[in-house]
Length: 286
Ligand code: C2E
Ligand code: MG
Ligand code: MG
Ligand code: MG
Image 1 (tube, rainbow, N blue to C red):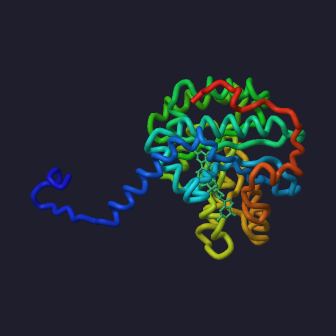
Image 2: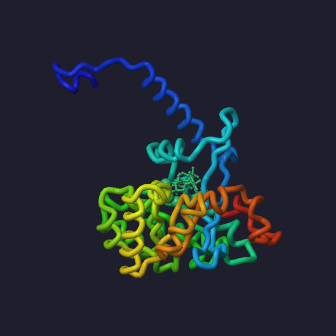
Image 3: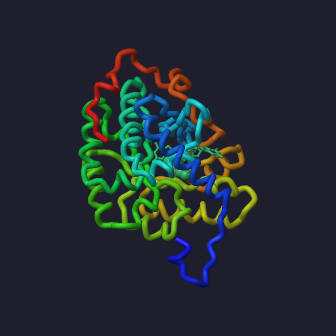
């Protein structure tokens, strides 16, 4: 590698970087067994209507219970899963699991599932989603797939075809982490989103940062002019709630309403029926 840089470039040996690489490789190896060894778990975070305060749905957020390291954050292992391609199998597992659990709820709340770029670029993805819906019996309109802008920049046309097929199933599409991408505005206008999720890095600052407040305000106006409802992520304080209510943001999600919790933590809210399909009996769609 140092050679490829040419004679004028010096490549320093960095032992800490070496350790980081080893660490990532070790995690990638462990992650390979995480699905089979039942180390993955779906947590659920509530989403509320801004005006009524009513619970409207949940976002499914993956957790990895590593046998030695304990709980590992998705911020750490999702990038590893994406680089290794494992995200396709893991993403399929999350989708199946979340849909299966949501189908048991007696209240028809929405269920939002994050979808990685590799899943979205799979031409069979809409078929896989259709199979999961059929097997679990979940109504398509209750499922929302969250896509980040980075998943849409490359091969826009192909992504658009897949998104249209997903929407034909009756599934909703949300743009996640709005504002953190390179050209959020143009992405917003190029795809038929059903919801925009404003990234929590902006929401976090609305109370004391006029630029962040202006970004949230203008995002809501823009989304509404395109007839798209807006959800604010990372809502932590009553001040955030007041601001977002004033600005006409439709939905909110964040620690103010509750942290992501295991399914047992929402049982009282969703009243799951006892009998449900065994996820292992589902066809392998990864
Ligand atoms: P995301 O989809 O934007 O999810 C929101 C993240 O913000 C979650 O972090 C959630 O726990 C956190 N959060 C929610 N409310 C608050 C708040 O009020 N304050 C703060 N400080 N944080 C809040 P989490 O669960 O660690 O997930 C991180 C990211 O990992 C997700 O961001 C998503 O991009 C990715 N991820 C999680 N599960 C999956 C999955 O099943 N598939 C894929 N492809 N990505 C996933
Ligand atoms: Mg998300
Ligand atoms: Mg987000
Ligand atoms: Mg995020």
